[in-house]
Length: 168
Image 1 (cartoon, one colour):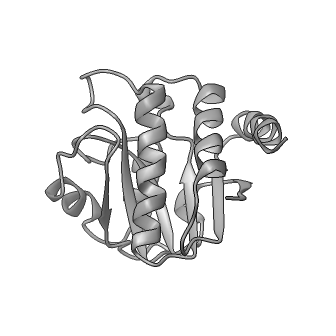
Image 2: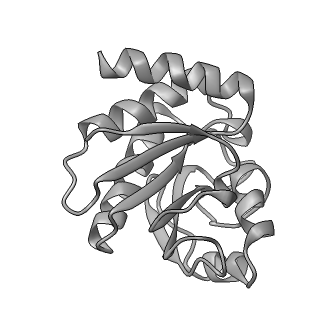
């Protein structure tokens, strides 16, 4: 499927579904999870934890608690904190399962971060390639607007380069 790239804070994005970069425990710590947790106006972390733990690569859905979305999809690209790092397979599986969850919910739009980077230990450029390739290969049912988001100027520049390569 076609996708766009955007720069900014995922917690400030508007879409039917926002994807959280989660560990298998679904506990919302720092990074993307922390941004979503802080911006939510309710017990999103508690609901997420109640849905876990999940298998590596799986996704779980919670209420958005005031975020500008209908759903938050928690995609487990890394093991529980301290129990290992993300892998190419876990990033691809978590991305694919997040997209499938959005389709199952009837979503038309989704915003995904580059899963598996940061605390999960994967290099940003490599994670961006896996996420962009997985989104590009995904055959959507209801999704028509997929956006991959990067926060910093440096990450966005890398995401632009990777996305251009994937689209060729």
